[in-house]
Length: 172
Image (cartoon, rainbow, N blue to C red; front, side):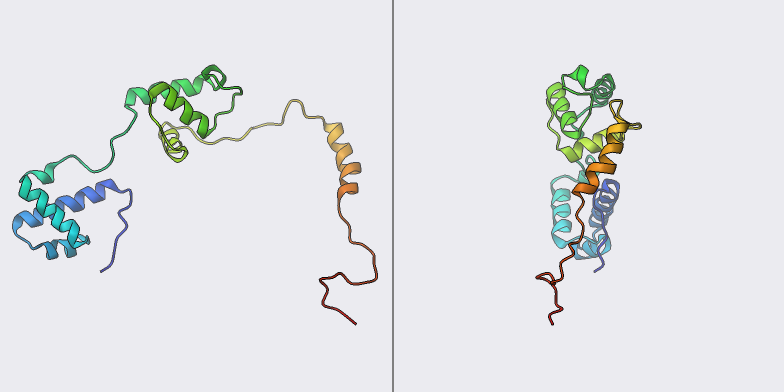
């Protein structure tokens, strides 16, 4: 049996479940439903059990965990992020995923993993960014001196010994 990837495609999962339940209501066997919907027999059996308990089970709410933050919370989070990290009690103006997670926990009493914070930020239209310019404190003369004098002194150069290294395979 070829398996399809329904991972995270909640609409496809919901459509598959509804199709399977319609087939069961029509009188198709669980094995036929499992084959047609490309699910396990256990899944078809659980759908049949749900229909036996409630004839309208196929109309239940869609799959998926409800969002922890409401639309109003997301708007408020976006405003807080735009106010800046310092205004929200952090020592520098840099937003990290961990800082945003702390902000969400502090302001909304909801705990998110770093990965999920990234999904929330992307949904709000934020993206990862890197500094656009160079640091104001940059000292071009010091950099030039380091490159021309210090770096060559630190850089390794091959030794001019006549004997081969211990890793050499050339032994006369």
